[in-house]
Image 1 (cartoon, rainbow, N blue to C red):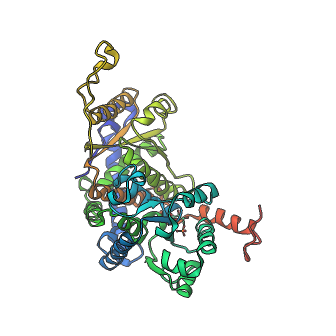
Image 2: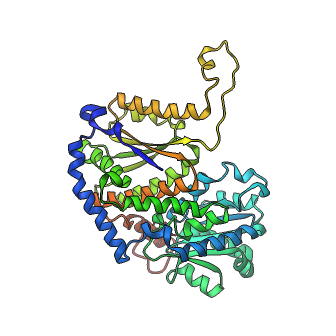
Image 3: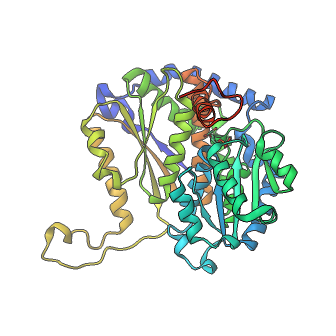
Length: 438
Ligand code: PA5
């Protein structure tokens, strides 16, 4: 079970630069009310993210189609961006072999996933250069059905493949009724799965948006959803001591509001969570970045960023809280062999494991930050598995919704993003967007 340790954020550890129990207690009533409000929104059907791991019909549809694609195709290319890509990317990098694209197809759990994401022709053409397009399914994922980057890729494929191959090789994940992609799906009889109306992109990883690519790649989605459901249950509790999202938000919000620390650095000590940290940046930033409320999400990876960002965290402005994620047990480990014994500067490493080195570095970084009065939180997972990644992803979604209540902003819209999309449409000549000139 996922554990949260906030000790190194508190006044007991940091003195006047730590959060006091009194400050945390003062937030408890507002946090309890926020949990209740989110629950009421779920009951009324206005919100849905906490319920997603138990929506059987949608889950079965995604898993069955994923299994079919896994049997038919060697590759699955996700055409999607932002919330329509980052969740599946986090699942892929979190749970698949780190170099699965280089494994022979027979040794992979399923289809090889690719995420060209951007309207960058070098990436898209580069991908088409190296994959066997005949053996590839293209998952066109867009909630709105009208995102420019996704359509640029889809139109290119349509031009190259023609209508019949598009029908065979494209699966759409989009709104059930609205949007340009749904209209094309209906007209062209493409396979498709719906994105629930009330679920926005960055909260959609447990819908077909995340589940279809994951199932196509052979990820154990049932275990993922089990972990997510377990965490959703914990995060519905109005008792602070039982609710990890409330505990996390209490400390981060207090660090911000009482001590002026508006930066939230997520620093997993596992390469597999690098893309999870990217997903977090979008979730936290796009949901909370409104008005002058928003904390700034920052992505780091330990120990790599000890050789990069850590100097800023240690001795730059004291305006950030670092959240570490550590694994108790690594999926693979390696004992560092003996050698070059005369070199005492490095000989001490022999006999320790890579994992011991990494976890010691995490604890050392936390200790060094604390020594300078800088706060950190540690989230520990027993082992990085589909279930624990499900827990982590649900924890951060619940924390985001709660934090939005505390900051008094709507977590589920993104007016700034939409405005930028409108300027793009205006500049590129979309009818109806003439007012948006650059
Ligand atoms: O989280 C969000 O809502 C956004 O990041 C969207 O996912 C992103 O803009 C892509 O939108 P769409 O899924 O409509 O293509």
